[in-house]
Length: 318
Length: 301
Image (cartoon, rainbow over all chains, first blue to last red; front, side, top):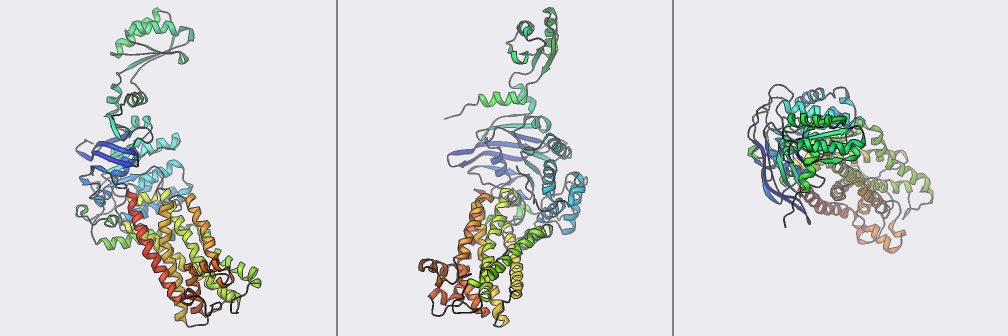
């Protein structure tokens, strides 16, 4: 699926609650066919941004369009083009899965027959056909979330908004949801998701916007962001705690870089420029020093490291 | 309100919808937004019916809960009629159960506020309201559907109570026109309480906060002409009871049913119960419907 023009564009969004600026000049572009993630700490403004883009909230300033329609002036046109999965399961708990989907189909103005057909189709697709008659209150967390997703796809939305889609789910539920999202993306659905889990970004997203204090402080692909804090690192974990100083010397000599030592983990770590050369040099240096290593890895920094790095260095303008 | 103009926007015009499609349907994924065919009003009515139908489906899925809601006022009737009935005297004389039935009808109408408030706060706290607000449906229908469902529920509740009343010996002594008018007054009051309830639900937001309403309806129900005559209460309490909107409807219903307990030569408010049984609900609607509508719009703030 080729990625083309922007489906969501936001410029300088502002939203204030009393003294707190929930959004403080947030800019955002979501390209067609992409999965764009908004990551950031609690209260960073991710959910507020989604609520503005889905017309649930009116911004105090700035402008935003979805599929070319202004979220404030053309709210109903925007609502006709989006799907939203909110933070909590937002389906009717008393009704069954099928009843929910038929109801949402009717509210999307499908005929009764089409609404029923669509409900069955979506239930089958999300592996809920058997549970379709049961009340949502009997569903597992992952099932609820999948039904939530199904309810957001009654009509093919131009953009699917997922606000923390896996928060509160166990690992099994999480991978269920990831699988469902991945297959939607494979078919070309554009997704904007918010998350606190960097693993989720690694799993799903093409583009990442790091949000802090109501605006985007860094953006790029997950790889771009990882490169920002100095590229690859080599980690050496030694078998014996007593070997850590010797390993530190060996790794320092081999890489010629400033090393980081974590004695508790028996780990020595250093930034590297060329992966293969560094790996060979470190292995040789350790053998020469007669330090047995338990594990040697060359890796990209994790998004957690990027995240901490970028938010810690964020300056707050006066 | 802006939220009512779903699908009316020219920009939302789409080609006629050719059946359900979406990602995953594997075929015509090109399908666009919801159609804007037909008038906004037509969709508002259709959406209202869908939202109201949701509550009716709740009853079908939880018949026990539904039956309990119908039976609660019946229990009240039986309890007051048989347990306390012997100790109660009806002002001006007459059978206590004949006096009691209009009172319990009024009480059930008042307690209906709880159901409305609880429905609104549950949807808000579970994110259902937000999901509905993100759909290309009529915004008015979200609240109007609730109102319709609650009115259907109230009608069934009144019917159950009337049957129970007949079973315990209550009778009306006037023509069917008057009886229909009396029941109509109860429904009118319930309609007013629907808007009070929707407003309170939107203000209170959480089921925990909504407990306040569940507590406050009790004094409101009992400080009325429902179970005892305000004339027998201490002066200040009697005055509050007489000016309680529920009392006007109950007293008016007693007059229309030909049931005992209608004070002669009482205060102005008691003398004009039938008038006030219309005025009170209209005033409540005039105040709370705009407040509720505004509160709903302000969810976007």
